[in-house]
Length: 473
Ligand SMILES: *Cc1c(COP(=O)(O)O)cnc(C)c1O
Image 1 (cartoon, protein in one colour):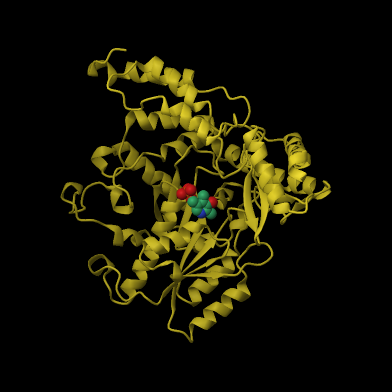
Image 2 (image 1 turned 90 degrees about the horizontal axis):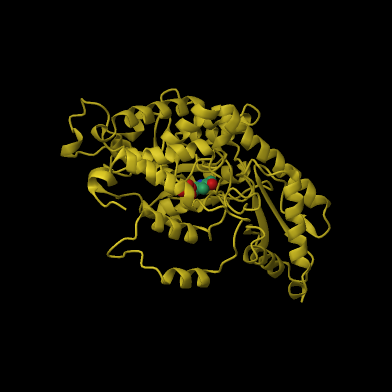
């Protein structure tokens, strides 16, 4: 390959690189090859990832293809462990354009069109979620969005006490408490730790039989704070819990946050996609009353990692993040520098992915994918209910199915083994989870290609894996 900078950084060379990438995209044969970490480590230890002289694009791509062959195939209908979606084709085109144009969303002069387009995307998202005066920013995903939501909650609460968190840091916040459900994503607790409030500042609200925040339990907790020196500052609701897809009673929770003056953050990383579905959007009723929302595009909206958005109801909420940096127009009278709203500095133009996807396919198509998998999860529930030895943890609520095989004296070990066995022999990639301390298997259905027939086969594999002699012994 020609190593002349003139050609390496040219339009033609980018085109060649894209074609080489197409050729290197592995054609998978099943959800996984079953390679173990030890095998992969040994194979890869023979290559030097930082050689002094290169062997050219074609060779490097061929080598990469060999490595990538031991990836899980996220487009395979038996690769259904986690909230890891098959990316939809237009988003792959966007991904290439993002890399090749390499705009950085921190300042307008590094991303003129991208700044305007992300702003427009955020404006439309705000209208989809019912924020008339809202604003937002693209993030790497739910982790960053949740951190940002709780950061604003903390700073608003400090400011209400006359403390300037920007200047003085975390003082006088020992009594702050953040409420979230036992089923909330671990990143809510992680955010409390990162924000210096400590994990002990998080108070878990018990859930009902559907894994939703139990309102009576929440009310009792809120009452109990009146007689302690603890001060609740925020309530985190979840729209789509990771295991059961449960959506907390958002409107009823919104009432409590008004009554008790709490920041209301809704983690809709998974379930936020329902906002695009005429059939399911009513399940998010009350989401427009949040102070902030996390929504991920790299889950039920079929974008490649990472692509999330963080939205706020009041555009002024971002003020506490503003920075005085000489190269970023501190006077603020020019075009916007989106770094002012982000926890990151250099930032990819990830908004181009949903932009190109929705422009190409329309929200109807994207919503129909989610609708299909929701209907399919319900069917999977029916199959489990009518299959001997299989037991549902609870009715599917979104697109997950949590169940276990009960055909052994030690079901925990049995289900553990089923999962490992199917992974190791490359039959299926399933998840494990625990429900009240018991081990369960989980399907996370995102792939719109999955059919009822695929599901029947999958459950059959589960039952066969359970029936092999070594497992029963
Ligand atoms: C996936 C998920 C997260 C974490 O988001 P990332 O995009 O992985 O950073 C947080 N909350 C919920 C409910 C999720 O589903």
